[in-house]
Amino acid sequence: MIEHAFTENIRQVLDHHFKAASVGILEKSELLQYINVKTKSANRGSKSRGSFANLYAIYVLVEDYIAKEFHKKGDYSKYAGAVFSDLFRRQRQLPFGAKLQNHALNHRLNEEFKKFFPTCQFTPIMRDPSTNRYWINTNLLAATVEGQTYNLAEPIIGIIDAYIAAKRDSLTNFIEACTKLKDLMGETPKEVETYIIGLLAPNIDARLFEIVSFAILKYFYHEQFVYFGFTLEEVKKEHLRLFKTGRTNANDGGIDFVMRPLGRFFQVTETLDVKKYFLDIDKLERFPISFVIKSAESISSLRARLEQGAKEQYVVETIVRSYMACIEEIINVPRLKECFQTAVKQSYLPAILDEIVRQSKLEFNYTEDAEVAVDDEDDEDESAPAG
Image 1 (spheres, rainbow, N blue to C red):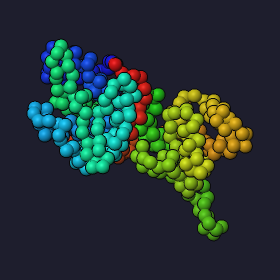
Image 2 (image 1 turned 180 degrees about the horizontal axis):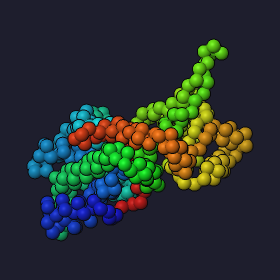
Image 3 (image 1 turned 90 degrees about the vertical axis):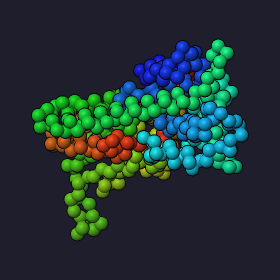
């Protein structure tokens, strides 16, 4: 089993419920070990992905199980099952859950659980498609240590509640840090610059990287202009304006930013998987697209790698050239830093920080009581098996 900072919190909850048996219970329970994996970002700050979708799928089903008092009495096998609409509504009521979709309840949790525990004969969620009713798999809610079987329902709720509190605090601290820097802008602008540059680091969550990239590029292009019009009489000077198309994991067909009036498309990515790039190009019917890549590798090297990947995938030179021609521009982290310095020289540092705060609040539905929401994409790299 992997160990991380929040693992100790898990142990404390189990100790509270099970005393000396807690160590053996954690070693025996695949579901607790899975929760341990999904809570590893708790102490990494607001910039780490929360993985709430799958956790909340577990949470709402276990909560329903407890509400019906099956942890104390009754035969859960006779239960008619939880109604999907009730579960869906409940997960969206939870902190960080307002934008969650149905994927975790329907298939994603079970699929990922199998990835971590391929030899386990049980999956966490059972579902009857004909009635759209759901059950938690009680085989995973039990752990037997030295001949005694323990019910894990209440500690699972306690563990996830503790994780919610940790993530809520870290996001609040991030927003407060940005706000404090904004107040100090006139006194310590270099400190603000250093902080924003730090948000482009390799270990920063992909969502925040997209937000920071947008803020930088928005004000980098802000002073650039073109002459645009449908007739000679209508031609006028227009500044380039960058717009964010939606949330960072929106189903937007591969468009993260759009530029007016040129109609340029931008896609932000942290992967170097060639298939992903050309899939985005295909989704736009081979319309030219600029890629903002979370990589310090040189632009020429990134382009060469993409071209080599295209040759391996498509073989035919004409097809390779047609795909490569669709890559309008590659913007890497060093280029983003150059754009940032240009915008700073044009006195846009306060505006960039404001934009980061504004977009972060929008992205996480932040309010002053830190009731926030994230999307349902649990796509962080957690491929190492647990156990």
